[in-house]
Image (cartoon, rainbow, N blue to C red; front, side, top):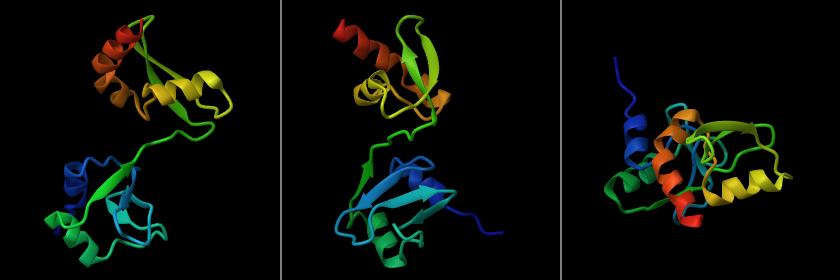
Length: 127
């Protein structure tokens, strides 16, 4: 049985499932890593030539920062409780927008837990 190595490559590139990215100089941006595949803006797999250029470091990728969609559950680090809280994101809510702009808005509770210490230190700097 063959093994899909794309998830390992994506991890090395700093991509998590659902991340969008640009391939510098590529006409079919933005690209996406999802369900073990690297696809272009049309949903087609990235061409072997482009993929090999990424592997050899000839072509650079740039991760597009994640932005939550309206109605999506997101997590944040709460300085009040030194814990993780959640909310339903709304793009017309100034508090939600400011949390995202500050970098305190995560897709999963696990991501929020991983960034908790760094975020609490950042919050302390602003106090």
